[in-house]
Image 1 (cartoon, helix red, strand yellow):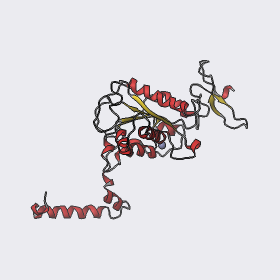
Image 2 (image 1 turned 180 degrees about the horizontal axis):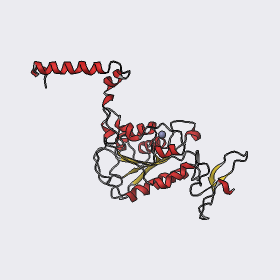
Image 3 (image 1 turned 90 degrees about the vertical axis):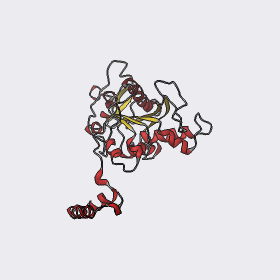
Image 4 (image 1 turned 135 degrees about the horizontal axis):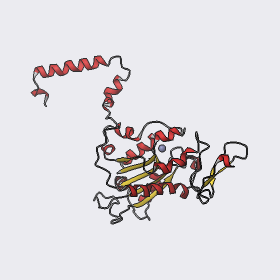
Length: 287
Ligand SMILES: [Zn+2]
């Protein structure tokens, strides 16, 4: 409504309500922050997502989540139970070309989807605190998408655009840094397994902000509201990757691993072994 078309009583009402609103917040230390950025209007994370039901079968989701688990071994010299078992795979589920200059038309007819890249937590190995599994995977995918002699040969802008066609699978719910990277990438989908509350239940150090909250609190970024977030896929299988590392140090090792005591009488940990072949998982108490 143009201002010059508004009636005087209407303007008076607006001015009066603004005054009352400001006065009500005059003792609120967040008053200026909230009003300046519109942050007082965060959508409710529980109701912010109204996408239609997931069109991808759960069996397909589980297939790719197992691949995210497998990425741990692939990127850790064959060790299936690394510390910080945050593995990731980025998948192209697009069956129809989008015409947006992306990669959706590369793998037409592949019902299951196709793998673009994998990643795994490498912060200690690489000495880089940003290399959580999700960020490592995004870096790997960008390198693959833009490689001049590779399969895709995309420019930078094309690679960024292509991320909007892709689905990121990760063995655990992304931390705020990785949730933000996924949001900035504008991924089509983000699928996680073990949730942040479950990680915390096993004493994993964590910034306890759920991914849905990160996305819901993104203001003015449309992609934040088009990314489908699917949680808890295969969570009963991935939880064992994490639970032996802190609070539940007595827990069984993940498949393919056995407990090895620390030579110094310390805690010890899970190492590659044939516990699964014997139909049992080695246990600290059994050594
Ligand atoms: Zn992270």
